[in-house]
Length: 149
Image 1 (cartoon, rainbow, N blue to C red):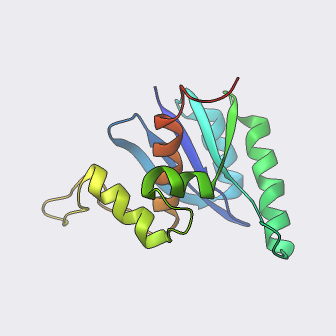
Image 2 (spheres, helix red, strand yellow):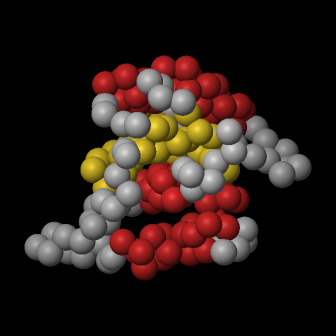
């Protein structure tokens, strides 16, 4: 099974294709190009990080990101699963208070160190939003059977 996971943004989105044991592809592209990824890449399921405000005020960027999420879900060839960051943190770090650095470390603990250019590891080249997309992919893959129907 191949999961195509998205960490959406206002203008750019990170995506990771994950087969449950290794990263098949990890990129960060403009949103219009991500729509083409959803149309043209091979995958069995889509997982997209969803916005949650938890009572905090949000601005224009959050709503623009929500619009893009809707556009991505619309063109996906497989049912898109919306994944909340809190659930990802609980799954990988066992705490909703985990920070991005904790999530990154949990992924490194599971998949191995990034390594170097001469000796690349499983997560070599990952940075910034790619880590978030990978976390969504791992969560979606791990919990695919437990998902309510």
